Length: 235
Image 1 (tube, rainbow, N blue to C red):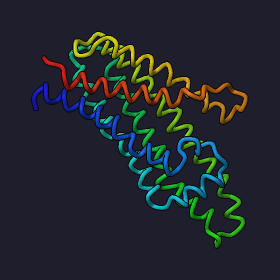
Image 2 (image 1 turned 60 degrees about the vertical axis):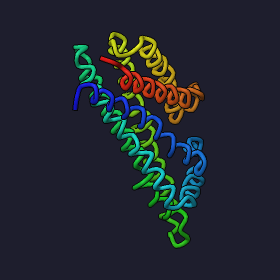
Image 3 (image 1 turned 60 degrees about the horizontal axis):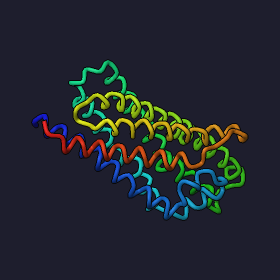
């Protein structure tokens, strides 16, 4: 594979990954009231999840693994930007990949943990002691797998990767400088979404409600734009 083909493939991974991730996301909005359902009472979440059946589980599985192309893009971008000789490139790539993997692990709780809890909670044959314990188990899994791993560590590491890569591509001839600024703006907005996570343990913590959606959309847009530049650049 030539250098040009390698660079174009890395760009395609970013474009495909950023666009494809919207398919399961949209299905979850339509069929599971995502993401509002995440802060709903446990009984409502488990009951609605069980009602979704196997298609909902498959949707969550797709949502988790659809990020793989983006991980490939991150790794390949490391090689593409190697000529920039930035001392932070390897660190940024490692942070980005770890962040992506952590987010995948967090999402997979909806595939391998929540279905079991939802089935037990809604099964009339489940004894009262077990049923009473399920909400506590779900909250622990939800808070650890979702809030800590997926939303805090995963998103935070992704934000760091985006900020560092933006600093590197700012000096790269492949990209226009505004692409780096878009990455920095997306990072600044996305970091505000962390306020909602702290509010889960500190109810009085001020929340920027719009930051999660706007930040994630800007992140996806930035990756698409970056992918387009990687594909179209002429050596």
